[in-house]
View (tube, rainbow, N blue to C red):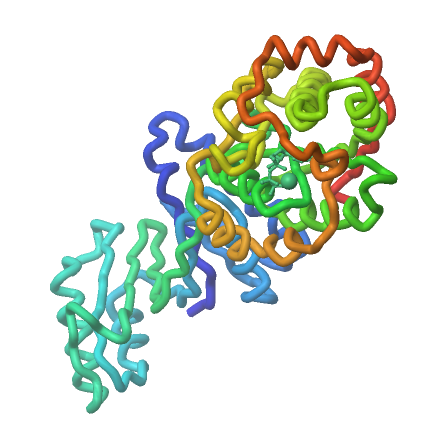
Length: 382
Ligand code: ATP
Ligand code: MG
């Protein structure tokens, strides 16, 4: 009899011929998440089993960040024979309503699921005066998972995780991370669909403070276990913003800044082979997130811009931010480069040709090159 942690996956089952590939990917991601833990892991049919571990709670909390895992249970592992299972069930001390839930994955096991449920239920009733069966609403469910590998897992609780698809180096993107609430949540949402992301942040020092930058680095580290980021790129927008401020129509400042962010992202995507750009934009949230504003930024994008929060309300975003523990950091009151040189009346319906006209007033290419040449790269895995 062993204490183990049982890991289940679901969507991977639908991957047909690619199932093996996805299982291997998930296994690798689990190993990365648990790289500082002591444990052994085995792949069995449709499950992973973790044994010989030191810190159960640490392992479970790290597994909760791994996309592709459907659920986790702390379980007892017993040999697949009727005597061993009934002996264990006989030892249970149960004083409440219960039901037994048998899953007979091993079809050679001699007793059918519903019969075995009845047999085990009877053993419990005989041994525990205060136990009573409740099929529909039991306080305790005793799960008996009889697997094909010769072992049965008995457990009570199922911890449901975020499911989704395992992160894959082949599906990667560049996240535009600000210090706000939205972009960390956007990263989380795309990672849920298996998109590994590195991070791009723009500051505007000395108009933005070192604390503002530190805050975004903290956010990056908080989302790193979910999104698998290796590098964070920090770019200074100072010179470019000053040029826009002095030379261009102020109502276009944010639109021009957004288009410049995408241009920098294009170059990094090309250089480091990212396939897509991710932002935390949500339709209509602010002037820079109207259909016309998004059209204007899309016009300069050379890669698909994914905006997973496009239909989210702020409360929905905040709920996820709290769940992934980024909210408290995001609300720290430091300024973002979008909030410096903020025009009083930002344009709500920018026109592409007007934005292009404004951009011609400055030496945009040179300024973008300056940004790229002075990029700071942080290795998030160190
Ligand atoms: P957030 O809460 O993520 O800051 P927001 O509601 O404040 O979003 P905006 O400031 O308009 O919205 O930013 C929209 C998106 O543009 C952000 O979600 C982010 O993806 C990107 N972005 C904004 N500022 C920066 C920045 N300084 N560096 C990198 N990306 C940024
Ligand atoms: Mg912002």
